[in-house]
View 1 (spheres, rainbow, N blue to C red):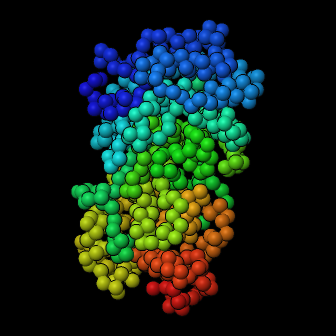
View 2 (view 1 turned 60 degrees about the horizontal axis):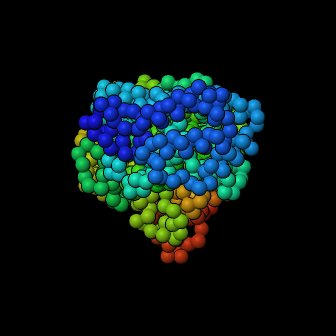
View 3 (view 1 turned 135 degrees about the vertical axis):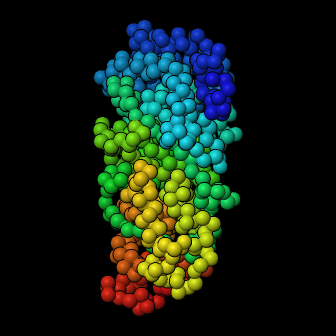
Length: 554
């Protein structure tokens, strides 16, 4: 085990040691303490929140790597408050009588579970082409980690018991991982949404301790290289978008409903913080944090995924949903069990695909500057694009030859419907061939994007701008559709009519990008004060209107 590079990278962030080529807890005393808890409250005396935190403190004191690291000063009060005052007597009896002993047993098996994980990783998934062992997936290092749901359960048990070392996490730009701040925040300033976040987590532990799931979850760091690399798409420049002749994909406007409830097979967008999970383990309670509460296995990624750079995204496939909920932010409430009925793929992952992309925070007027437009569209494109399919459509993208070298204005305006060719094939034919190749390789060709007002809430982005940016990115990534959840936002009330009009006139990605750039320039200079949709189609003309009838169309 000592020679494994993947283990070496993550071991400083784990509560385990390597002894005689095996993983183990740092001392026999830690194992004995866990064994006592596994025997139940009559033996361990862990029957209250206060006693649980005393046991947590003891475990940490017995671990040399943790003994000098303080927890949040209010964590002890938070654990006592939740388990001793907010939990009912029946809930408390079940928690301390059944769940805590089961979690202690799971933690006793944590070293062997991790060893088995590395043994399986050696055989390799994905046709043996990728390393999948648990490791630090550092910035600018594309890669995948695949974890069993049982191993994730053990990792989250360590979170609950605050067993992860944290003093060295800041240097690597890793987010919070232990649950001490989550419980401390409940005590600092009580609100119901914080209590209900914890209820989601507690429900997850109750579920896995009664019936451990057996699937896999994959965590991928996706990178658009800043320099050109063979066999992958590099970070696009503005001319890449300006000259693109890719047709725009279908838009499905959803004025009600939630992204996580979508029934189509789609990549679901996490409106992420650059630190994956955002405030999930603190006081945050908006889109990303809620998703991490109802799908708690997502939290495992916070252990080994440092913050995202501007050319990076994170994709997570297979996280199971355990909780139902109502409300949002301060009105968020846990509303009971959720049975996840999503199908499972050939690797044993649930077909829940989530892409985490972080928008510009508080961009103000600078979001209309071209460099910010480029940053946002490339961020979305990184999240939506599948680099593993590069070889199937490299003719569309490689070195941007198709987009940059062979287009004049006339061809650019008509490419989506003409016989325009690259390598003797039309654009549409290349796409069709790409789809056929994907099918033959076992890839799905019908996975669209399910998203909404990314970066438009607490981050303060322009929803009309972000809608168009995501549509462009999804189209350029050759996604068949984008399902857009407006959450009944007034600024997007005409989105359906505008997108249908654009599609009816067969605009390309380049056409729409150029209009967005022109609008943004005017907006930044104060030459217009209307939103993009109104600026583009000021009178929302009938379907028989010609493109030339409108003042703001190319």
